[in-house]
Amino acid sequence: MKYFIFSILVMSILGNVQAQNEWALERDKNGIKVWTRKRSNSSLKEYKGITIINATVDELVEIFKNTKLHDQFLYKAQPGSVKVVKKNSDDDFYTYMIVNAPIVKDRDVVTHYKLTKDSKTGIATFELEAAPNLVPINSDYVRVPEMKGYWKFIPKGNSTEVIHQAYSLTGGNIPSGLANSAAVDTPFSMLSKLKNLAEK
Picture 1 (cartoon, one colour):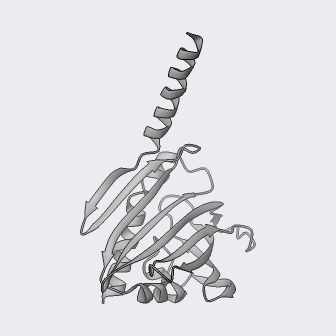
Picture 2 (tube, one colour):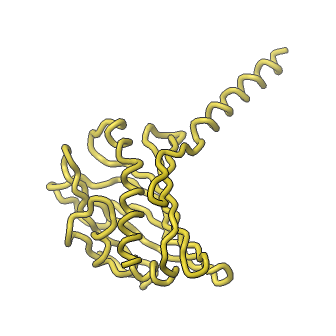
């Protein structure tokens, strides 16, 4: 009997965790879909956005490698602030960027980009991860302490399916409700701007 009750409790807990981790569709507009979900070890939401862009995988990869274009589509990037701070190769580099933050202090983020491409499927993926200690702290900004995600480009004939998934910690003392309010706007804005940039 005790084992039965224990099993029910375990299944209930696992069921609640699974429910918390399920993706919820938050926006479906202009050919862009955005989902969010709560992470099991955080009150902050992770997001995922998907769209189709009328450009090839290689064209989109070149946009990402051209860091001078990043402030044209990355969310609230301060114009002219994106700089390459370390480069291991064309497919492995680090950027520094200032993020304009309404209401609260502006953020800065150091991001490690690493490209992999599957020769069989043609799928290209930029893995993203924050590298907060690579650049000295600037007291004018709050450094983003943690961020992880990816941009995936999947060939679809002459077009490309673009998937962007990520989560981050904003740094500082921002209430989780305020931070989560941008979880839908962030990927939707970036995918919209990337689409306009690639298709013009």
